[in-house]
Length: 465
Ligand code: PA5
Image 1 (cartoon, rainbow, N blue to C red):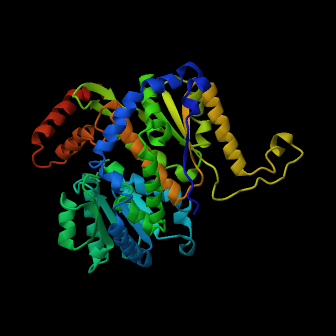
Image 2: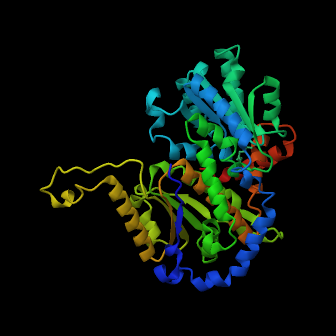
Image 3: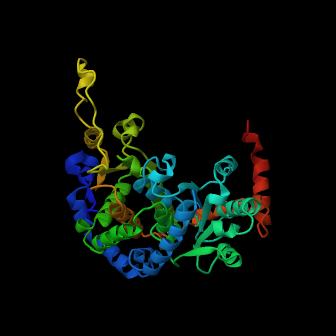
């Protein structure tokens, strides 16, 4: 595998290319002290950001992951992840990026691992449809919850344990692997009681920063992905991200540009990859960016209500759906295009209707040329319309470049958090909804919250028609 570096092209953010909405070199220069301060804070806080060490300190963990993965690969037809948020989006994104695009439909001999299902919802129809199609005796479930207490994941575990007891009987616990915190939470207790194979999410690695921990690595290894190369790519990016000069650090520069754009009213961040393999990177990034930066108060307790709403788009598909808005709509967004130099395959467009010039011009080209031309054309149209954009290019989608991309976006998010002076690593806004769910389901200690909810429901009935 060629160890090529991913690139950031931010011409589309700069005023000389997009006009008055753009950022000027002088603005970047004027903010230099702020960037230097944030870079210094990143250095100081590095030891607290445990996710930054994942590419460096998992030698034994990787061996253990490979051992468990080999066992699963040789014994099962289906591998099911039970998890949500940061415990699901990374595995989905990396699998989509690095496995065959129609992986589950391939016959086993052509597939690099067992079928993969990531169950990140508690829609009853979805769970029951999964149980309709898998053979429990040939399935391993990886229950992933860092906190060990997430209601969605724990209810899935209860359902699956019950089903395995009934269908597989003796030895059913061999069909579950737990990935959780080493000490905290309920899952580690259950795993101990049942003697489950267990992998630990290191202390200080939050859900949305955990893809390069066992959360993502077991799934990747089970599906035949080269996890050493993934970590190698992240390590390579870490070296680039150690540079405190934003002009030489793609993650810092990308964060600095987004934050400047936010100050100009760009409260929406669109990510638009031109590769189906990167389709679910947008979901992973959406969580990372939204949950990390969407904050009420800053580190000094001031109400800031900050954040940028992530929007997922797909090139070329959404050229026929969203790009109209991105060119003629309000100047409230930035677009991050994600492109690929070399696709893993080439498809020729054959000659057929050469007598119809409006069709014939396509013949002789490849889909590779077409998708790249459409990406370049859309980038041009967005720039010409005065909207802000940048492009991240992967020389090729492989484990090394995907490792770089994941790590770069994580560092970008942390650096943006520093620039905004907020805590990018907590999610207090998620708690209210979690507590309300506990109350509605009758969890002990949430009686008051339940009364509050019931009173609200009664009061609001007049607005239901
Ligand atoms: O980023 C986060 O911390 C969250 O999105 C969590 O990943 C999500 O809530 C699931 O949490 P857990 O892994 O504890 O079940």
